[in-house]
Length: 283
Ligand code: NDP
Image (cartoon, rainbow, N blue to C red; front, side):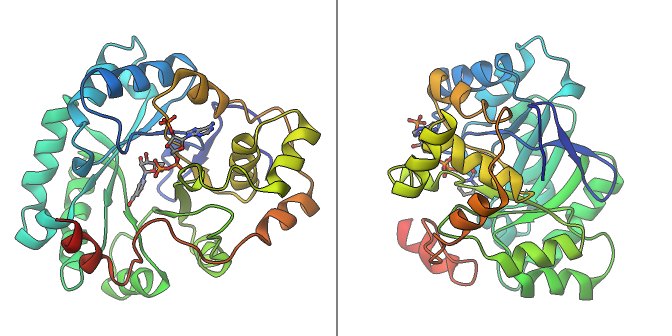
């Protein structure tokens, strides 16, 4: 796929346009750190910011957006409903809290952060209502596998417009990508840089020197060429800029395939089928 500039958007199945590139802010501290990151991103041309109630930085994200001078309708804001609120059934309240903290009148994309077993289909019904009320422009899910996506189909009604999953050269999940393409669900990568752990790979370094780019830029370009939207995170201005300078080169089809072969199903985060255990252990 040819994505040739930072303003390029993908049309979600409901017609909403979403930028292919966004800034992730997981682990960017609320206050100065996240405010600076979002401000740098917006002044470098980013137009999508990915946060979550769990990141505890929605206030800073909102402040940076409101002070950016960029019109609200030119910025795409994603936030997510956390596990606890799904368990408590306090979805609408959690949504209102996010909106309040962000200081915004609507959210562009609201996601189920992790599909809590026995709860997430009920949660999805509330997201559908929020969507119908116009409080969110699009709704989707995160950390879902094909069986989750099939269960939304069985439920009927509005279907997820996007899936945000862990995705990088070591976790390609081509069958899931194909499923999403077939069902017109946009795929968006979290940890597209594998949290920095893939950047010393020899193949990526070789391609980087061939194109006069960095391994990070090669990885992000590879994702785009596979039709996957990306939300790399950085709190450093130079890296925020570096991660956006990926629209002036094109990997060959063979190079894309070569990067695909790095896949060995390594995850940096939890598995969508046993994340409750993972987060309970952390708590
Ligand atoms: P990323 O793959 O984006 O990697 C971020 C790490 O890489 C940071 O340590 C950053 O450091 C470093 N980095 C960034 N750019 C470069 C570069 N050019 N060269 C070298 N190092 C670099 O991981 P994330 O886990 O943050 O994922 C991205 C976003 O996805 C998150 O911020 C969040 O918005 C979302 N996410 C969603 C999840 C979900 O469950 N839905 C789960 C996890 C993430 P530094 O900041 O110091 O520059």
